[in-house]
Image 1 (cartoon, helix red, strand yellow):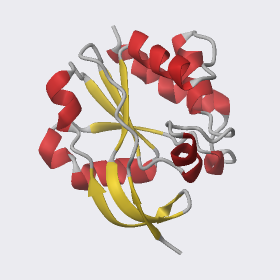
Image 2 (cartoon, rainbow, N blue to C red):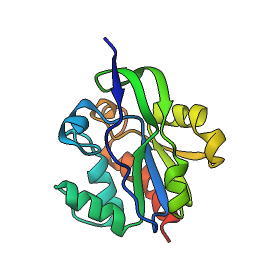
Image 3 (cartoon, rainbow, N blue to C red):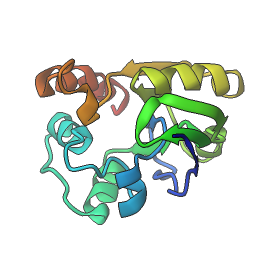
Image 4 (cartoon, helix red, strand yellow):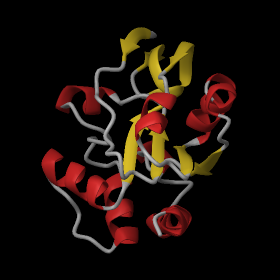
Length: 165
């Protein structure tokens, strides 16, 4: 059963951010903990720390520091939607975040969307406002484990480095 979920996490960025990574909507675990990609089996932080050649951050503060030090902004495409649990395929009545909020304050060179649904929703709801196409990255969700190994994810996410120069 779908429930109406409103995004409650602040975007993470500084005026020096060069890339913006957008998910779809925080999972129930991330909303419970109060930070992005907080499900213990989500591979986002492991993959990001690998491509950045940094230790895996454990605390929210360490995660924010890693993002800020590497000029990476983090947010989600959606401001609200109806969703069942963390199932992106169940999303109904999506409403977009104002992505230009970050672009007005940061020097974003590229936008990356994590997962097929985030990419579809960005193209449908945000692209006409940003005029900046997103680059698709595979989902790091535990639901995507069978389809995407940690090595495949790391290789795909490595493209981010091209924009951090």
